Length: 395
Ligand SMILES: N=CN[C@@H](CCC(=O)O)C(=O)O
Ligand SMILES: [Zn+2]
Image (cartoon, rainbow, N blue to C red; front, top):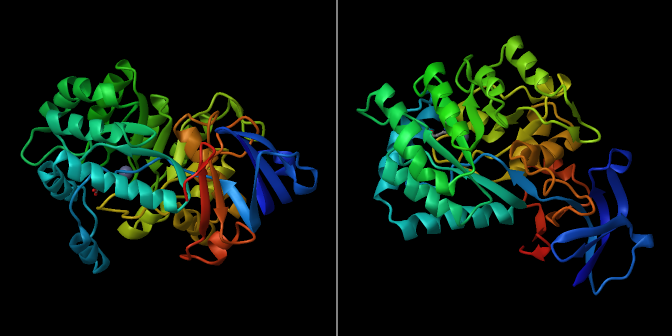
């Protein structure tokens, strides 16, 4: 069954020659994009949908979330707004609450957060473990996530649980915990930061997880300068996330990982994506990640929600993309690309999702606006009008 979606005032494509098309149309056939171009030249289709002069983007690709959790940390957030600094220890609070939640409750909480993200235009989602912090719980959370999201990341190395020895816990993560989670996960991550895992422990976790066939991601340089970015590039991680505190050597290392890549043609070997998490930066009062500096250095940048109860309790990619324009010096086009194609690159899913191109999965986001600049022009407004995922309308 083919569907012609016409009356698109502004269509954002991946073609550098015709990045933005006006008075456009698109044909969806099955789960694929079959045609795109001027509405006046659109071929016939079985069905016809009028976009009503609205702007269409690729669906958001949210490459960094922690949505398997129970409980709430609004009191910690309120204390932070009154001047208290963020500290990784809060992860223990959520771990206790999540361990107490049954499977059905956790799955229902996760599904509700996914539905909220979808209502905001997200069509491809990663989520992490990391609030279990023992073998059985990490495996349980990964199993629950595996049936609900597009990519599962093992983050047993999120925090050394209260009372545990860091070296012994790192051994547990690299051994029985990794083995128990492996059947459900495609990625592994580590919180390489003061108060979490140091350079030696982080490298040990990443190498063990790579050995087990998992792709690698790193939480790095969030609370201060550190080895996270350097280790991420060293192990060829698909992304290093947060990146709030970078030294020139970090930027150079990231840029060096992209020398085999052509940004315009999207050809070559992708390097380590720098994932910026603006909602988290605002919530933790950290400096906004230097997305502008990274783009100017030739680094591919992603934007993600980092939805979690401790530092970023939002699923709104519209908010993150608008904030990247308003506060991080990205152009609208750069911010939209970071929230779509950038996220797909960070998940190495860029051949399947993250852009509107013939042959790719028909993940589409129709805005309640004539142009995508309204994401920054009208911050905080409910600008998602319709969403298609794999060719099926879901909002
Ligand atoms: N920094 C590490 N992990 C999460 C926060 C986890 C928490 O505080 O619950 C993050 O990405 O911000
Ligand atoms: Zn995170």
